[in-house]
Length: 456
Image 1: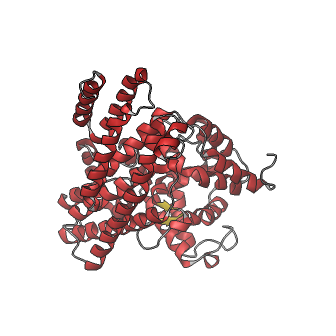
Image 2: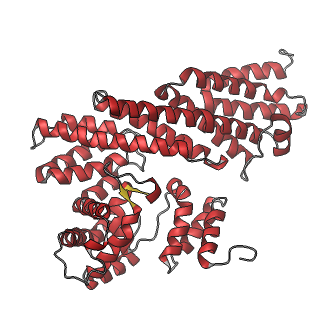
């Protein structure tokens, strides 16, 4: 890499940074190369850099024993810099020592058999993956408990409990709890829609109710571990809590209600921290859509949990939720709205014309129509979020002003008369995405009258 970084690790960091501007197809090619890097530090460096894109693409990634082991736990992991304790989450920092111990302690025949079967598995067959994972998950949960209890021979496992921070040991205990219910988690993930699940269908609720009843009969701790993972996959976690609150469980009404309050409050705290992180993180123009989706998910999450928990009686928690809603509102107002509007009009016409006439930055390096529609979709999300975070009047006025500007954009004197019909159709399409078909149809009618000379 001439002119670039000098060390191998720096070169891979350069690859990660460069990958953010690649097309989806090229990014997946980079991912395939990274999966084969022998140096896991280098692989992690690249994956950390491109993870936001991977979350959106959801590519099927080559399975190896370590990835299969942590697959049921994946929804609970946070990056180390964003991890907070005591809210049912785990730091990715625990993965390395946990795998170091398990890979040195698990039976070599089990690891070899797992690797051989993974080489042949159909990644589109969840049942086959579960069949391969079950022996690994059960053995690993058992070994983790022996390790944490001091029951493994010193020196055999490559790391000793006294070498690790108490917090990492607590997280290993959390991993063991999830691995106990790994089969149920993977069955649910295979049948539910992709994360984040927008809403639960009747079939989804029936599946989860059956699983909850089965786990509740076995152990309250198993039920709690299962629920923590599933709730993390839902845009509206309160939907599941309301279902849980109506089930008759062996533990009795009192314990069931306590469980609902405990895991609901834990998920609520997690959303508060996510909202704070969202405000702190600067966003690039190519992240507007992702940021809008995250803001909408958080707003929906707060609303659903508050409803499921019967309001927020704890004043301290209620104050934090209000503050978190304010953080989301600030992101919507200052980051998404401002940037999406500028990018929308930059992409509506040529980059040079947009910069000259609208004071907007040049459109990103992708098809202008795609950029404009992505910006319009982000603006539509802002409109949906606005009421939940207390800024509906302000956002409504801004969206109306944007639609008015779009409607009049084909009349710009710099646009050639022969191009105005096409410009009108582009504007109407964007108005439809932002405000809906009724507003778009009215704009189309007014635009055609103007083109016919009636509005001159």
